[in-house]
Amino acid sequence: MTGLEFLAPEHRNLFIGGEWRDADGGERFDVLDPADGSVLADVADASVADSVEALDAAVGAQAAWGRTPPRERGEILRRAFELIASRADGFATLMSLEMGKTVAEAKGEVSYGNEFFRWYSEEAVRIHGRWMQAPAGGSRLLTIKKPVGPCLFVTPWNFPLAMGTRKIGPAIAAGCTMVVKPAAQTPLTMLALAAVLAEAGLPDGVLNVVTTKRAGKVSEALQADDRLRKISFTGSTGIGKVLVRQSADQLQRVSMELGGNAPFLVFEDADVDAAVDGAMIAKMRNMGEACTAANRFLVHSSVAEEFGHKLADRMGALKLGRGQETGVDVGPLIDENAVESVGQLVTDAVHDGAKVVVGGSAPDGPGYFYEPTVLLDVPADSAINSEEIFGPVAPITAFDTEEQAIERANATEYGLASYVYTRDLARTIRMAESLEFGMIGVNTGLVSNPAAPFGGVKQSGFGREGGFEGIEEYLDTTYVSLPAD
View (cartoon, rainbow, N blue to C red):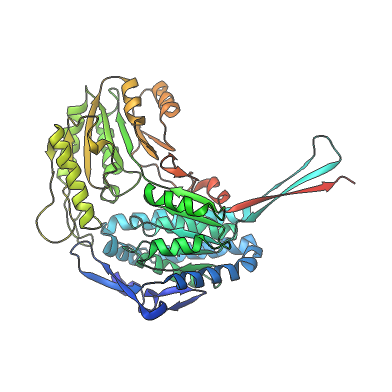
């Protein structure tokens, strides 16, 4: 099966307590194809009452699920991993249709996102506390790890599968139940994922999915409920702050993966060709619509022109088009607002004195496309260096000294990902210690890895997803004092 055939009609409804059901009042909303703006499908539009019923289901399933043997939880994740792997083509095409990325890139996301299920299927049996003698004697100290409890996951539109598995995987492994609210632009992939987990044997009520256009009202209502114990959100810093404030009344556990403004530093000793290769990955993954995307290219003045023109040659050779078409390298952006936002940043940069080497405009015709673009001589204080672009635009700003590079790289309220190209080991160590970011890629344009902790500092949020650290976000610690005799 391919495309919309991959998602059964009944699976375009709400998934609550193990049942696929209509929204309260039968309301639905359209999912659009960003390649031409046409309607792909419609899905149930959950009300606040629907979302509370989803939380009811999660709460009802929590006690039994939390007592489920870790091996059993891990085996469910493993079966889901195998099912997804066997249906990678269907997932990829569905994702390409609703989000816009090419099928080839979507297959990469399926592989990457699915690894979270495999990783946490193995981590489920490695949850452990500790036993020790009290330093002064007389008692023993026992610590026990317990599931946090019912969670709310709010996932973004840019990685419809991976941003779900990155949260769902550790929650299942830890023994938590959940309500998932996928982005309204891309709900189809999450619904397909829910169907797979049900097929893999996940008990009713452990995972509940509510698709809705009322995101704010739904999250506010659920966070006001003292039965919800944790929220994990991936999205903009502005919305993240709202959710953090709403979490305060119930003192809910919070994980926030928010905005980014990643610097891509190229020093004078770098392998320029390798840096261009890395830049193509760091910039053009997901058409630049990624929080880890290289947003600012800070290049030593001695190699800035060479780097810029080589990058422009590569960017200019990319073919735009519908993500499902053969030979297409770059799909559409998510919507018209995205195209307008990217275009305005480029216009402002040119007004500030930047030079367009390639691209620089939106092509005529249907769909939400923007040309891969390289800008040289971008002033350090141009808006394009301070705002998240979320599009296929590479602004290049030159620097002269290492100190200047560090200062400019850190001159942002965000602190998610950063990239450094240098062949100097001592400089690599200095960069690792000086850059104010949660993740640093050295001579690589790809930092995301299911086995590594993903997350940022400053206005990019807090908490970590992936790695050994990721499961700790879903566990509470209980200390037990035992007499020695």
